[in-house]
Image 1 (tube, rainbow, N blue to C red):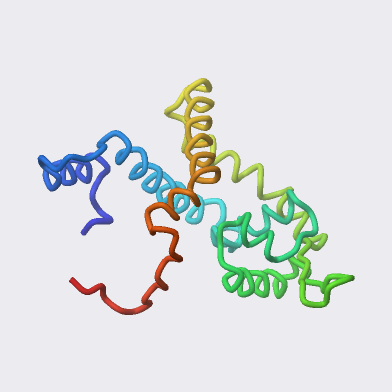
Image 2 (cartoon, one colour):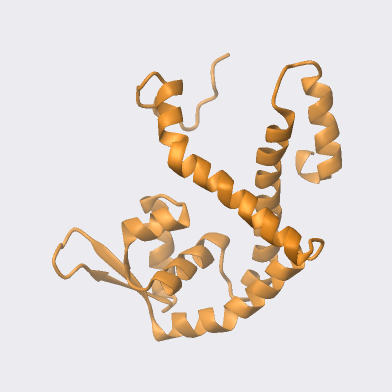
Length: 190
Protein backbone atom coordinates (compact mmCIF):
# COMPACT_ATOMS: atom_id res chain seq x y z
CA UNK A 1 0.00 0.00 0.00
CA UNK A 2 1.31 3.51 -0.78
CA UNK A 3 0.72 4.75 2.78
CA UNK A 4 3.07 2.07 4.11
CA UNK A 5 6.07 3.00 1.95
CA UNK A 6 8.95 4.94 3.44
CA UNK A 7 10.05 8.21 1.91
CA UNK A 8 13.15 6.44 0.56
CA UNK A 9 11.04 3.76 -1.16
CA UNK A 10 8.71 6.38 -2.63
CA UNK A 11 11.64 8.35 -4.02
CA UNK A 12 13.14 5.21 -5.62
CA UNK A 13 9.78 4.28 -7.20
CA UNK A 14 9.31 7.80 -8.59
CA UNK A 15 12.84 7.86 -10.02
CA UNK A 16 12.30 4.49 -11.71
CA UNK A 17 8.92 5.53 -13.13
CA UNK A 18 10.17 8.85 -14.47
CA UNK A 19 13.31 7.38 -16.00
CA UNK A 20 14.48 9.61 -18.81
CA UNK A 21 11.57 12.07 -18.78
CA UNK A 22 13.06 15.58 -18.75
CA UNK A 23 11.78 17.12 -15.54
CA UNK A 24 12.97 19.50 -12.81
CA UNK A 25 13.89 16.78 -10.29
CA UNK A 26 15.13 19.02 -7.46
CA UNK A 27 12.01 21.18 -7.63
CA UNK A 28 9.81 18.06 -7.82
CA UNK A 29 11.52 16.80 -4.65
CA UNK A 30 10.83 20.12 -2.90
CA UNK A 31 7.10 20.05 -3.67
CA UNK A 32 6.74 16.31 -2.98
CA UNK A 33 8.53 16.65 0.34
CA UNK A 34 6.46 19.68 1.35
CA UNK A 35 3.40 17.47 0.89
CA UNK A 36 4.96 14.47 2.65
CA UNK A 37 6.19 16.57 5.56
CA UNK A 38 2.85 18.35 5.97
CA UNK A 39 0.97 15.03 5.94
CA UNK A 40 3.37 13.36 8.38
CA UNK A 41 3.34 16.31 10.80
CA UNK A 42 -0.43 16.71 10.63
CA UNK A 43 -1.00 13.01 11.30
CA UNK A 44 1.49 12.98 14.19
CA UNK A 45 -0.04 16.06 15.83
CA UNK A 46 -3.60 14.81 15.39
CA UNK A 47 -2.68 11.43 16.90
CA UNK A 48 -0.76 12.90 19.82
CA UNK A 49 -1.44 16.29 21.35
CA UNK A 50 -4.68 17.11 19.49
CA UNK A 51 -6.29 13.76 20.23
CA UNK A 52 -6.15 14.51 23.96
CA UNK A 53 -8.13 17.69 23.32
CA UNK A 54 -10.50 15.87 20.92
CA UNK A 55 -9.56 18.25 18.08
CA UNK A 56 -8.89 17.65 14.43
CA UNK A 57 -6.09 19.51 12.68
CA UNK A 58 -8.63 21.77 10.97
CA UNK A 59 -10.41 22.57 14.25
CA UNK A 60 -7.07 23.41 15.88
CA UNK A 61 -6.07 25.68 12.97
CA UNK A 62 -9.41 27.52 13.20
CA UNK A 63 -8.93 28.01 16.95
CA UNK A 64 -5.33 29.13 16.36
CA UNK A 65 -6.34 31.70 13.73
CA UNK A 66 -9.06 33.20 15.94
CA UNK A 67 -6.79 33.06 19.00
CA UNK A 68 -3.98 34.93 17.22
CA UNK A 69 -6.05 37.36 15.12
CA UNK A 70 -8.85 37.93 17.62
CA UNK A 71 -12.47 38.36 16.58
CA UNK A 72 -12.56 37.89 12.80
CA UNK A 73 -14.97 37.57 9.91
CA UNK A 74 -15.53 33.99 8.80
CA UNK A 75 -14.20 34.67 5.30
CA UNK A 76 -10.88 35.83 6.76
CA UNK A 77 -10.67 32.84 9.12
CA UNK A 78 -11.38 30.42 6.25
CA UNK A 79 -8.75 32.06 4.05
CA UNK A 80 -6.11 32.11 6.80
CA UNK A 81 -6.88 28.50 7.76
CA UNK A 82 -6.72 27.39 4.13
CA UNK A 83 -10.21 25.91 4.11
CA UNK A 84 -13.48 26.62 2.32
CA UNK A 85 -16.18 28.73 3.94
CA UNK A 86 -18.40 25.64 3.89
CA UNK A 87 -15.84 23.62 5.83
CA UNK A 88 -15.44 26.49 8.27
CA UNK A 89 -19.21 26.57 8.86
CA UNK A 90 -19.21 22.93 9.99
CA UNK A 91 -16.05 23.25 12.08
CA UNK A 92 -17.16 26.49 13.74
CA UNK A 93 -20.57 25.04 14.61
CA UNK A 94 -18.86 22.03 16.22
CA UNK A 95 -16.49 24.29 18.18
CA UNK A 96 -19.38 26.54 19.16
CA UNK A 97 -21.31 23.48 20.41
CA UNK A 98 -18.31 22.55 22.55
CA UNK A 99 -18.28 26.04 24.06
CA UNK A 100 -14.90 26.98 22.53
CA UNK A 101 -15.96 29.43 19.84
CA UNK A 102 -18.61 32.15 19.64
CA UNK A 103 -20.37 33.09 16.41
CA UNK A 104 -21.99 36.52 16.21
CA UNK A 105 -23.51 38.71 13.55
CA UNK A 106 -21.46 41.62 12.27
CA UNK A 107 -22.69 44.86 13.89
CA UNK A 108 -22.95 46.81 10.60
CA UNK A 109 -23.43 44.06 7.97
CA UNK A 110 -25.97 41.36 8.77
CA UNK A 111 -24.60 39.14 6.00
CA UNK A 112 -21.29 38.67 7.80
CA UNK A 113 -20.48 36.42 10.76
CA UNK A 114 -17.75 37.09 13.30
CA UNK A 115 -15.90 34.39 15.21
CA UNK A 116 -14.22 34.80 18.59
CA UNK A 117 -12.99 32.44 21.27
CA UNK A 118 -14.97 31.96 24.44
CA UNK A 119 -13.18 32.06 27.80
CA UNK A 120 -13.07 28.26 27.64
CA UNK A 121 -11.56 28.43 24.13
CA UNK A 122 -8.93 30.92 25.30
CA UNK A 123 -8.07 28.70 28.26
CA UNK A 124 -7.82 25.63 26.01
CA UNK A 125 -5.41 27.36 23.62
CA UNK A 126 -3.24 28.67 26.48
CA UNK A 127 -3.08 25.12 27.84
CA UNK A 128 -2.83 23.27 24.52
CA UNK A 129 -0.38 25.38 22.56
CA UNK A 130 2.68 24.70 24.75
CA UNK A 131 2.11 20.94 24.29
CA UNK A 132 1.57 21.49 20.56
CA UNK A 133 4.82 23.45 20.38
CA UNK A 134 6.67 20.64 22.18
CA UNK A 135 5.56 18.33 19.36
CA UNK A 136 6.68 20.93 16.80
CA UNK A 137 10.10 20.77 18.46
CA UNK A 138 9.98 16.96 18.34
CA UNK A 139 9.22 16.77 14.61
CA UNK A 140 12.03 19.24 13.84
CA UNK A 141 14.52 17.69 16.27
CA UNK A 142 16.79 16.26 13.54
CA UNK A 143 17.52 19.82 12.42
CA UNK A 144 19.80 22.34 14.12
CA UNK A 145 18.45 25.77 15.00
CA UNK A 146 20.17 27.20 11.93
CA UNK A 147 18.72 24.47 9.71
CA UNK A 148 15.26 25.21 11.13
CA UNK A 149 15.64 28.89 10.29
CA UNK A 150 16.96 28.09 6.79
CA UNK A 151 14.13 25.65 6.11
CA UNK A 152 11.52 28.08 7.44
CA UNK A 153 12.95 30.81 5.21
CA UNK A 154 13.02 28.50 2.18
CA UNK A 155 9.39 27.51 2.73
CA UNK A 156 8.48 31.18 3.22
CA UNK A 157 10.04 31.86 -0.21
CA UNK A 158 7.89 29.10 -1.75
CA UNK A 159 4.77 30.69 -0.23
CA UNK A 160 5.78 34.17 -1.40
CA UNK A 161 6.39 32.89 -4.95
CA UNK A 162 2.86 31.49 -5.12
CA UNK A 163 1.28 34.51 -3.38
CA UNK A 164 3.05 37.06 -5.55
CA UNK A 165 3.21 35.29 -8.91
CA UNK A 166 0.79 32.37 -8.81
CA UNK A 167 -2.24 34.17 -10.22
CA UNK A 168 -0.27 35.57 -13.16
CA UNK A 169 1.18 32.11 -13.85
CA UNK A 170 -2.26 30.47 -13.65
CA UNK A 171 -3.68 32.99 -16.11
CA UNK A 172 -0.76 32.41 -18.51
CA UNK A 173 -1.15 28.61 -18.31
CA UNK A 174 -4.90 28.84 -18.93
CA UNK A 175 -4.66 31.60 -21.56
CA UNK A 176 -6.55 33.94 -19.21
CA UNK A 177 -9.52 31.58 -18.82
CA UNK A 178 -11.06 30.58 -15.52
CA UNK A 179 -10.25 27.00 -14.57
CA UNK A 180 -12.87 24.42 -15.49
CA UNK A 181 -15.03 23.39 -12.53
CA UNK A 182 -13.90 20.26 -10.73
CA UNK A 183 -15.87 17.13 -11.46
CA UNK A 184 -16.56 15.68 -8.06
CA UNK A 185 -17.07 11.96 -7.78
CA UNK A 186 -16.24 11.29 -11.42
CA UNK A 187 -13.18 9.65 -12.82
CA UNK A 188 -11.10 11.59 -15.31
CA UNK A 189 -11.45 10.52 -18.89
CA UNK A 190 -8.38 9.16 -20.51
